[in-house]
Length: 125
Image (cartoon, rainbow, N blue to C red; front, side, top):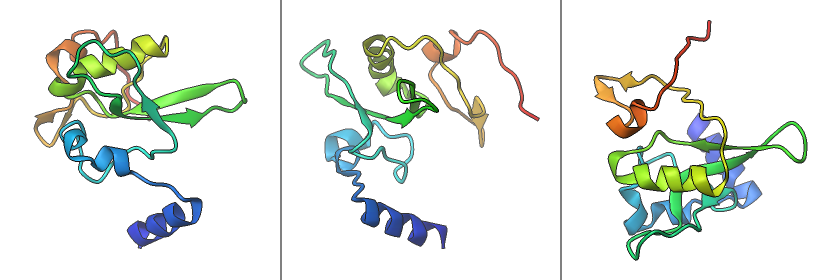
């Protein structure tokens, strides 16, 4: 039921996920069914090599005020760690919040280079 309501909602608003579904971007998605909307995705502009693309599985989210916005992103994969830091640098991100478990179903959610940078953790009750 939720999936059909989501599909209907996406159609009504004209939301698409074509960029995330492109063959060259599939490997950059942690989950095959969670893709950023083309209309609100973060587009990377800081290209560091010919192999770089403008795709990262991340979206802009409006904040409470008009001048405030956030970025929601999947935890970086080993293959997308450089893209993740390109995004952080490009958008001058000051705070990163990881809102998932570090290990899910026996699988680590982020590469070593990202986990080592963790400062602290807390559990919401």
